[in-house]
Length: 504
Image (cartoon, rainbow, N blue to C red; front, side, top):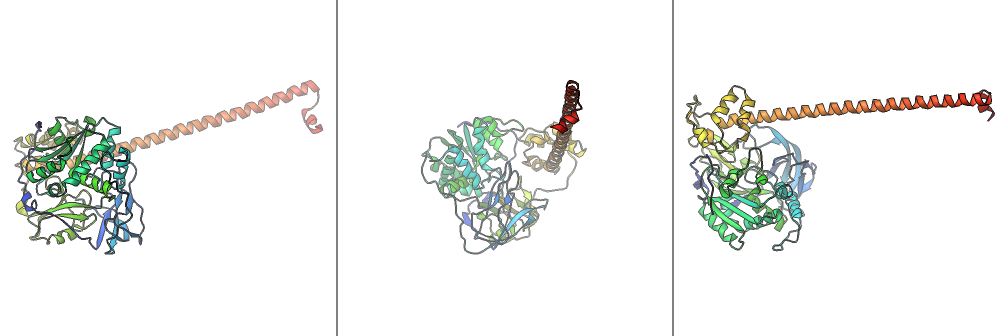
């Protein structure tokens, strides 16, 4: 299959060997889980349980909010002991509404959705499939955590002809998808076929980076019976796992800025998401656990672990032998696009593909020095931006100027920061600027909303005043008409109309 050139990117030292040969192990249920009600893009779920309530594993505890959102389920059986704000796995250390469950050691499942075990064609409609995926709370497990059912419904808004399955896993250290493809290839392929059925596409491309030959072999073997599925290898270059760049590499279709891949006819899903879809449809199981890579020279026993969602990072690290030496940096996700964790007490969530304990020797850090105008950041940027110019504008406070030359097209891959010989944290500048710009946009939309409400109120008040004025005029006219009629009666009879009324 022909591959297409993708601009930019960087070659990294991947260090995947720390965990790539370690099979997936299942972590026992911890004594307590803290399950945030927002583990996805969009609005948070709303709690549907109460403190003191007993719950089974897989039971709905948070119903999807308005608009884009996702259901949240109990990952263990036990008792809800609190519904309160707890630490989120975010570098800000901010809290968010969380359901805390104390385990009862029964490992008891709640009543699950009816499994669909029939072979293709499935005895349900595509819409029913997407509804089941939504009910299971499945989101993109590559890290973006976008609700998967929303993507499956893209066929109703756009002309979709291609499903791309992302097995690139381009971040250093992270090997959870690699192990899944080796160990659960048949489940992944089943999930892929289910998603293709829901999207009504005939072309399916599974793209895997060339540094995962065992995964490529396993996936090709599992997909051999379905001629609509092609398993292709793509170059090992970061950030090949970006949905837009992976789509460009395997189809030649370029996604315009501020657009989704669906708008050029393709939907991209992660391999772990495909497996979760298979589990939801074939066994009725909602998304309550995920495979996480625990790695870095700061952890004793690097591993790929199937972890119940809501498990604390501390419990997960203890399961992997603990920390030694004490790491310089603890990251949720990969080292390029992940985020520093505020504490080991933060929970594992749906988007947690990795927990990395990195020592000083592993971190490409140094004192920031002035830009030498080498242009390496420009060459490395996969979005075709000019990071050095954007950073200068942001430093001067000219956020709109940075926006004008593309700061909001940044995919936050960190390639520019990695390649910069002056150790300028370029990606941090862009994240800061985009956060401020988004806040300004929200404020502007809120002001527009307030203005529209005021205008609507003024118009309503004016309409009510007109109605009152018309009613008063009508009453005045009716009174005048009555007086005229009475005067006419007086002229005809020659009697006082009041005496006529009394006589009747």
